[in-house]
Length: 341
Image 1 (cartoon, one colour):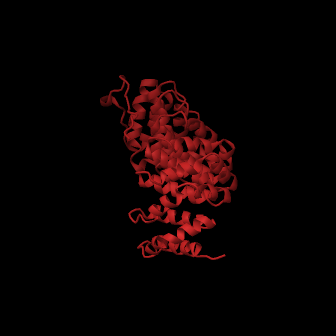
Image 2: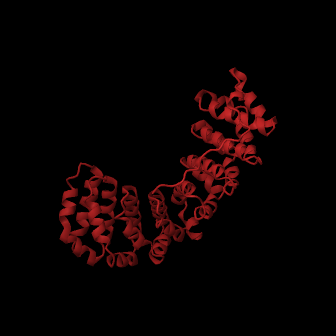
Image 3: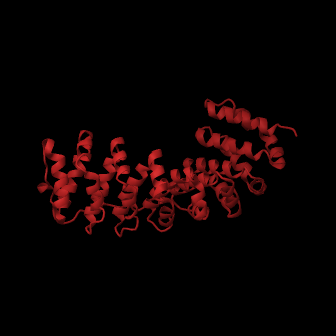
């Protein structure tokens, strides 16, 4: 489904022919000085120049030495929307480098970024969330995100944001919920993810299923997913047109179906049929492997085991796959299916 894109609208005061372009070893210090002392129009021109200047990897370390990051954090609080969105964009460029991410975390940038989650300008919010997603790709960033308690803030925004920003919020939640799922469970994240599984946008459905998979790691999450109706939604997504959605739905089901109540509920649904169809889908090895794993978990239920014995050819064919992971999972699933009490 096509979605509206957030586009940049430059202010009428911006004249690219008059942008300050410093050269030489004084350039980083001059840009930081202009950013701290200039009026709003000079700040705009400096930030436009800085966005291009920072794309040169050789300039990142020199700029960080001039305390550029604290200066950009201060600009996030500026009253001018262009200054805020360009400051966030500069932080995003810095975040693309390991030394930049280290400096951002040292200056507690995640706290400053979280204050902009409710900004009135969508472009500012989008740029801010892009920086958060980049920072949370590292273990250090995830630890910092948990320290500043980003999980409740993101869960609040994920239900009321524009689709493009909802996707960024979910990508930020994935590592946070993987590291600490219990915090999300206390905030009712399972119910929130159930709503997003019904989204018309496939990428949102895939990310929501991935978040639900992380939430279902503890037993409490499995029980909540069973009671709140996550299993029927995931079973439906096994037939989704998007391979990424099918893959994440199979992963989430494999996590939920560990408990006995979940198995009993799954047997009453077309879970076996959909998983068997996905297990024979050699075009998407990841989805095939996760579907076979889910079938191996479900085979612990006597009724499901008896039905799966009628389809052992699916596992035999998977055992001849070119993917080693698929072969290993298929062998393990065959042992579960043919096990006799």
